Length: 58
Image (cartoon, rainbow, N blue to C red; front, side, top):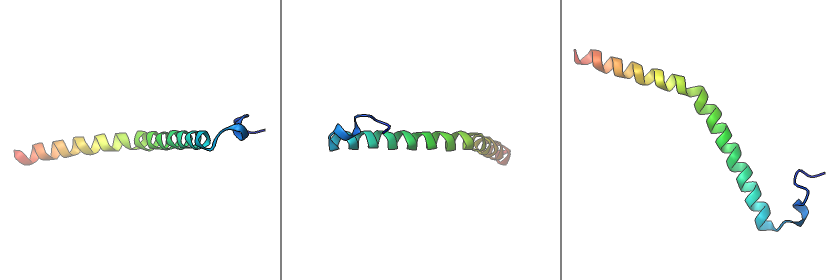
């Protein structure tokens, strides 16, 4: 049984649209996972840079 029961009756254009939407969702999901993992490190780097520049001015 296929994931989409009427896949065999869909036009090529409709199949391409479904595949493109699935790929887009996968890319967004991967980006969210990666950015969520890196966000604390990016924030830490920005804070360290701000403190470093503030100390260097004094």
